[in-house]
Length: 211
Image (cartoon, rainbow, N blue to C red; front, side, top):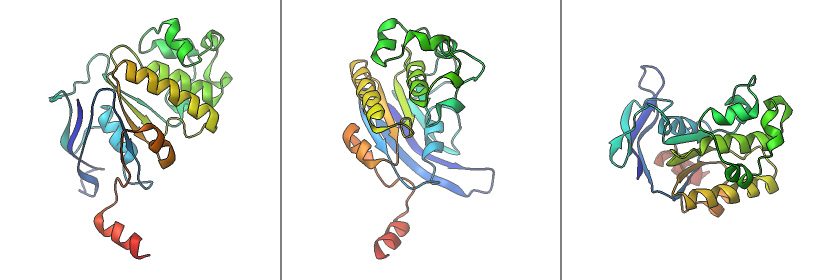
């Protein structure tokens, strides 16, 4: 079980909290969707969950124990812009092997051609880079995956094919997913449970209803 427990976060020391006392759980093999307005901290929450940021308050737990940032991290994150999450001077094969060495079956599952592995990121399309970053995140030590608008920049057909492969792989290997997206239709299709109003206070919701 992966758990974000009573987590709060603010920038600096002004105590202007982006979000406060937020909690959720993701079970192995479960897909939890997270949506909400821009600028309310969804990506920040994802970074906290993956160990990139330390929360101001609260804990990130796996099976009831705090996560350690040593060795291969069991919570991996895939971002909206894959070109910003990789070394542009590395060939695609080295980018994937940064985490682990995948077998041919995993590459085939995500339609990663062997010819891509010798190319640099600038020689690959957005869809190809998205597949490479997903494969890199699915090492044998990955137990939970955070996807932050991971397929938002892709055409609907490519998006559907990637999610079909990803969901099948994660269910087979009991990998839980926290899927962050503005696309509620996508979350409706892929998620077992969805939080639609992350970052919206009750007063904000009341104002929105009145307007």
